[in-house]
Length: 73
Length: 364
Length: 164
Image (cartoon, rainbow over all chains, first blue to last red):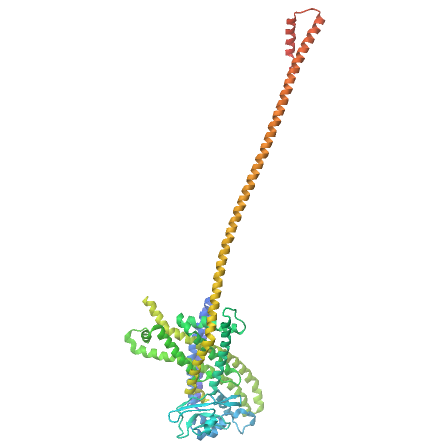
C-alpha cells in the first residue's frame, strides 16, 4: 500500500465524519422542530431532505476526489 | 501483494494497450470461475475484476453470458462517419482497431488503423445506453397504457396500476413541482419534464439493482447529460419568466452595482456548480452503493483465494447478510436520489425565477 | 475501476438525445392525456361538489318552507280547536242557563200557585171557622147577639191565631 491510497482512504473517512455530524445535527434540529410544531411536518421534511442532499453533495465531492486520487495516480 | 501490483500497472498503463495486454487479460474478467484456483487469479485481483463490471461495455451480457455485441458508430474528422453492426465487424473491416481481451470483450478507445490515434467521437451504442432505452421503453409503455385509459374515459375513477401512477404524478405535481417552482405557469409547462426526469432516473436506478442489470445513472456521462438538460431548463425558464434583462440583473445577486466584480463570477460559478453537484450526487450515490455491494461479495472470493475454501465458506453468511442490508439500503437510495434530483431541479428553477417574482412584488 | 470515472462524450450525447426523444414521446402519449384526464376529473368533482352544495341549499330552503307551512297549519289547527271548544262551552253554558231559567220560572209559578191556593184556602177556612164559631156560640149562649159585634169579636180572636 502506498501513501496516496492511504491518504485517499483517510480523506474519505474524515469526509464521512463531517458529513455524518452535519446530517445528524440537521436531523436533530428537524426532529426538535417537529416535536414543537407537528403541523409543519411536510414542509420540514422537504426542507430537511434538500439540506441533507446539499450536505451529502459536498461530502460526495470529496469522496469522488478521494476516488480520483486512487484511480488517476 | 502481487495482485495489487498487477492492478496498479493496469491503471497506470491504461491507454497504451499493446504493452499491457497480458495484464489486462489477467485483470479483466478472470473471476468468472473462481474455482479455477490460485494459478490464474491472485486474491488482490478480485476487487478490480468485480468492479470492472460497473462501467460501460461494448456488449450486452447477463452475468458472464454474452448475449450480443452492440453496434459501433464512429465520427472521425479524418476518416469520416462510419457505422458497424458490431465491434468485431468493425475490427474485421480493418479501418479501425480496438483492444480485445482474452474473453473476446472489446475495450475502448477506438483507434484509427492508419496512425493509431483515438477517433474524434465515438458514438457507439453501449450497454448503459441499452439499459437507458429499456428504462425509457418501460416508462413510455406504462404511461402510454395509462394515458390511453384517460383518453378513453377521462372522468372515470382510476383503477389498478392507474392509481399508483396517478398518485405518483399527483405527488410530484402537488408536493414537488408546484410549491418549489413557485410560478404556476412555469410549473405547468415543466411538470411533464419533472415526471419524465423522475421516472427515468428511478427506472435506471432500479435496473441497476436487478441482478444482471447495469446502472446507467452510475456513469458520470449519463448524470452529466441529465444535469446539462436541467441546466438549460433552469436558465431557459428563468429567462422566459423574467426576461433576459432581469436574468442578467440576477447575476448581480441583488448586490449594489459596484460589487459586480465579485458578485458576477460568484453567481456564474454557482450557476454551474448546481448542475455539477447534481451530477456528482447521483453518480456517487449510485456507484458507492454498488462498490460496497460488490466489495462485500468480493470478500468471499478474496478469502477463498487467500485463505482457502474453509475461510471462504465461513465468511459467506456474514458477507451475504451485509450485502442484503446494502441491497435494501440501495433500493431506498434509488428512490431517494431520483426524488432528490427532481426536487433539487425544481428548487433551482424556483430560485432562478424567484428573484423576478420578488422584484415584481417590490415594483407593485 | 478506472473506467468508472471516465466521462464518455458518446454516452453523454446519446443520453441527451434519448432523454429528449423520451420526453417528447412521454408528453405526447403519457402525461398529456394523463394530466388532461386529471384536470377533467378534478373539474368534474369540483362541479359535482358545487352542484351538491346547490342542491343541498335548495333542499334546505324547501325543508324550511315546509316546516314553516307545517307550523302555521299547526297554529291554525290549535286556534280552530280552541275556538270550537270555546263555542261548545258557550253553547253548553247557554243551554244550562236556559234550563235553569225555565226551571226557576216553573218552580216560581208553582210556588205562586201554591201560595194563591193557600191564601184562598185560608180565607175559606177563616170564613168557615167564623161562621162555625158564630153558630156554636149562638147555640151555647142562646142569646142573640148583635151579629156585627160578634163577627168583630171572632175576627179579633182569629187574628191572634198564628197565620198558618
